[in-house]
Each structure stands twice: as structure tokens, then as C-alpha cells.
Image 1 (cartoon, each protein chain N blue to C red):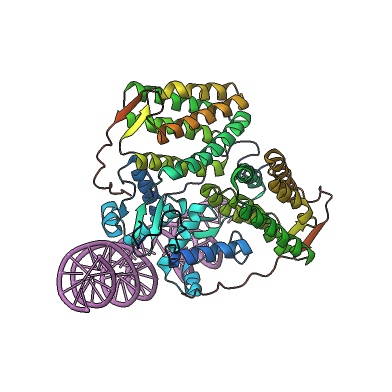
Image 2 (image 1 turned 60 degrees about the horizontal axis):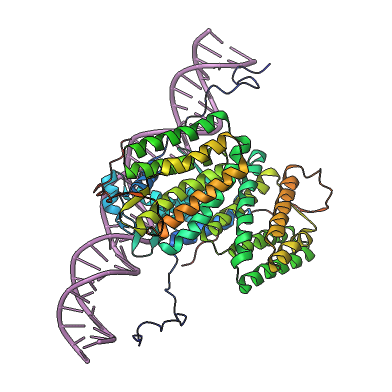
Length: 251
Length: 251
DNA sequence: ATTGTGCGATTGTAGGACAATCAGACAGAC
DNA sequence: GTCTGTCTGATTGTCCTACAATCGCACAAT
């Protein structure tokens, strides 16, 4: 008979260990989001006294969080000149997308094999959000929803490494998009072009799903590198003015 | 006519920008190496005052470096309980190796397509070092040389993302190996089993190279998870006593 | 046997201090 | 007129000290 202090074998534990996020965690996601959303422009320097003050944290805590982003590669540190948001120019886009293609295709194959129904449903619901964003003609929301579909696909793989890499890849894709052009453009048929991904995952067709992903990403590279050459109508939107200051963290 | 201050078009620039590594950089590699070499045992806590003193740096600098390793995933931070070297138990080995397989096979295909002769030569010379290490019956050196071959293969791909991921994967593979068993074992035919990788890369045979890598890594998983089930002789060596303290950094 | 409490140790965070370094401006030399 | 050297203000890199918060553990109380 199991002791009272431990859940019986075979039953799901009622409580999971509670872990309060550290301040560094909070700052990290705040910074990452600020870069992702464009509130921190690519190439812009991060003056630490100022940003630490805006975030309401100490300079040390800010620096620790910044070092995490340095390790992720979305912030670069130049000795003596401080930190700045990375830029990913035209030369970096192909390598970035080969890496991304690798992660997504591998994740897709894993997901086809092992994803639960719940995980598949999460992908579909992400796609539903994309459809709605497109109907609203909100370019930024479409861009985010687009990446969310890909994110859920990788999450469905259940592989922690792939998810970690994908989470930084998503930010880097956004960085590349910001670096290449100041105005944010997305294709108007984003939802339609992503529909096969969801359907093929639901059909558990690994080969076709991989092919669809490759096509989707190759398309994205084309659109980034030669936007004029592609005949698809795009939904343009001027780059929104970045929020001049970061939100203070409330802890 | 190009101005005198810039190199002529088409000529390789004579000078590359010199970047002095920051102290945080140095601490980071020092810690990573200490984990990789086993000087810092897996699961061991990193007491910061003590380690900062041993490294001869301030507590703040040490913490910044540690946060980079947290972002890499080879150090975990538990609020209130500090930092500890990650452990990767039996459950984590398969996901780790699927991620690793993905990185290496993708890199291999890129390398077959685009690697320079010089990069291919680097892979071969890494393999030569493996042969020598095996002849010396030095298990730890064999393990390091083994990973070095794989590392050079990924480096030959020329993709920055793959290289970055591989560099942390290598440490994590070592962590898994340390976690699973305290004694370090390597197969005695490591050099022989890696020879095809070099040859197939030189022959630029992508499909065969990928297959060889998959076989090699599947083998490694087997060896880690069921060392008794494999019939290959192994070269065992008791885990060396870790250096009790880190080397002070000289700057 | 469980619960409550105190204690020592370590971390989390803040803030100050100061040398090192950098970008840009300015003046002087060829 | 262009280049070179120097100065300056600002910012970073690094260190130190300090203190509250939290944790692990032992011990007493119920």
C-alpha cells in the first residue's frame, strides 16, 4: 500500500512542484518579447543603466538576463561598446532557414509518430487563430500567428531540444525580417498556405508533411530575399512605432 | 579605383577585426570545459562565492557567465537553491540523440555540398587524432577525440546555427555519459567505426554518409542504454578524480 | 510520527565605486 | 584639404559591500 505522502502508483500526481520564476527569468522573457515585437529595434544598443531603471531591476540582474540572450545569439556583446540587438542581414537568411527547416522537418516527423491528439489539436487551433488574424488584415498579428503554427508543430514533437532551438529561431526569423526591411509584410494567403501543414499532420503523413514544410519555408526565403519577384499579393503595414520604454516588471 | 583604406574588391581582407574576449567569455568556456572534462561533477552545485574566488573573478562576473550556461541548458538554476550542473538521465538520452542526429545529418549534407578541401582535411586530421588516442588506450582522450570528429564534421557545414547547437550538444552528450555511469567507457573500435564517416565525406556521398552517421549514433545510444547487451569490447577506465578546484583565469 | 521553530549558510538583489574603453569633436601637421 | 593626434564625455567592465529572502537541517514540541 502506498504511503499517504506519495500518490499511488499509476495515478497522476495531483500537485506539481511549484517553481516561482526568478527575476532573471522575467527580465529575459521581457527582453526577448521586446525584440520579437520590435519594441527594441534590431541593431539598437541596450544601455544597461537606463534599461535596468525602466524595468525596475538592478543593473546586475539586467546584465545576467542579457547574458542569456547573448548565449541564445539574439544579442551581441561587443567589449567596451556594450550590448546590441543582433541583426541578420540577407547573407544570414539562408543559413537561418536551413537551420529552421531542419528543426521543423525533424519535429514534424516526430510529431507524426508520437504527437497526442491534444497536441495536434493545439496546432489546429493555432491555425484557426491565423485565419482570424488574416481576416482582420492585421499584418503583425498574422506574422505572429504564422510563427505560432510552426511553434505548435515543433511543440507537438515533444522534443525539448527542438523546442528550445525553435523558440530562439522564431525570434531570429523576426529579427531577419526586421533587418531586411523596415516595413513588415506578410503574404495575404498565409492561412491558406498553412492549411496543408495541419491537414497532413492530422493525416499523419510524414513525407508529405515534410515536403509541405520545405515548400513553405523555401517560399518564405524567396519572399524575404526577392519580395518583388514573387507574384503573391502581400499585406503591407508600416512598422509600428516601438514602445519607447519597457514595461516595469511587477513582482 | 578603391580607396587606400579599403581592400580592393575581390581580395581577401588582410586584417580581421580584433576582438578581445571579455572576462565573461573566459569564465564561460572555463566552466563549460570543467563540466565537459568532468572536473565539475554532474548534479553538483556551483557555490558562487567559492567558485568566483577560485577563478579569481568577482561574484557578478561569475553569475553572468553562469547565466549563459543556463541559457544553453547545461546548468540549471533553482531559485533559492542556486546553480547546479544538469544531469541527463536515461530518459533524456533518446531525445538528446535524436536532436544530435538531426544536427549531424543535416550538417553532413551541407558539408558534402559545400565543404572546402581544408574543412574536409580538418575532419580527417581529427580522425587521425582519434586513431592515436585509441592506440594510447586513453579512454578519456578517445571520448574527446570521438566527439572532435563529429564536431569537425558539423564545422565543415559552415552553418553557424548548427555549430552553436553542436557545441552545446557535445557537452550534453558528455553529461549524459557521466550521469548514466560513473565510469567512463568507450568502444575499443571507435577509430575503425569512424573511418567511414571521413571516407564518405571525402567521397562526397551524402546518402551513405547520413546512413553511416545514423548507424554510428544509434550505436552510441545502445551502448549508453544497454551497455551489457552490445557485444563490442569496451575500454573502461575509472572516472578520474576531478581537479578539486578550477584554474584561476589569467587575463 | 508529525508539526513547528530556530539557526547557519547561501543565494538574490541592490547600489556604489572606479578604471578601461569607446565615439566623436577639435586642433594641429603635412 | 586630408590626415593624425589628443581631449572629453559617456558608457561599459569589473569589483566590492551590504542585506533581505530563502533553503536545508537539526531540534524541540505537540
